[in-house]
Amino acid sequence: MGKLNGKIAVVTGASKGIGAAIAEALGADGASVVVNYSTDKAGAEKTVKKITGSGSKAVAVQADVSKQDHVARLFAETKKAYGKVDILVNNAGIFEFRPLEQIDADHFHRQFNLNVLGTLFATQEAAKLMPAEGGSVINLSSVVSLTPPANGSVYSATKAAVDVITRSLAQELGPRKIRVNSIAPGFTITEGVISTGADVAFKDYAVSRTPLGRPGEPQDIAKAALFLASDDSGWVTGEVLPVGGGVRM
Image (cartoon, rainbow, N blue to C red; front, side, top):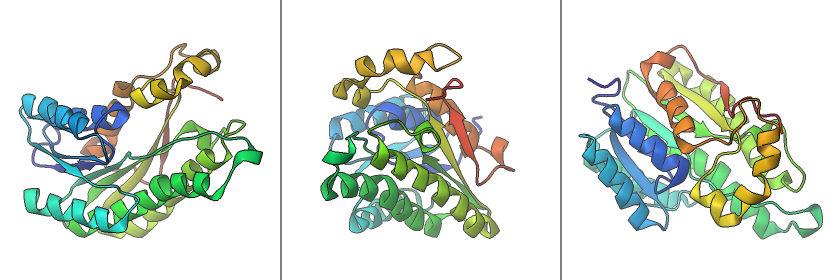
């Protein structure tokens, strides 16, 4: 039996990269998974197929989690499919680096609306469906929340906000036995990173600052998420867990 048998997990932004790896890991350990996606339906269906292939249940649900009505629909579909939520992984997010002189309102709001508001909206709805025995909320932060790089002021600020939200909601939801933690990945090779060319531009620098001497892979982050989703972390809440090979940006 898996540690998550009987549990229901919602993973936002799970069509590829870290989100897909986490969804697949939770499914492989017994959870039934709602695979959220915004635009990549094919990627979400691929994730669903991998989860069902491991013997668990999964459905794909489209929703842009920066929009409150979409989030309400996501959790209405979750309730219809599974009746409850035990685990929420707030993974959906975007990143864009710009120097100070190029920052504008669109650059700011695009990242804050998804990375920060989306985290709040999803947690708000998930908490309504969590049972009396509690649940686990896992927010995806980043090492940039503690060591922000040049040209990353807005993105780094969104992740710092996620960490503060994590600590605050851990206090607020603790009486309901809902644990809230953040994972702060270091430089991790994903489809999104490759598509922006960041795997070439930043890899050597990131690895040079990483004691374990390599970039991360999505599965590295998924293993940490599995720990925070399970009862193994039952006495852990309000924490930010760096998962970056010891990276210091």
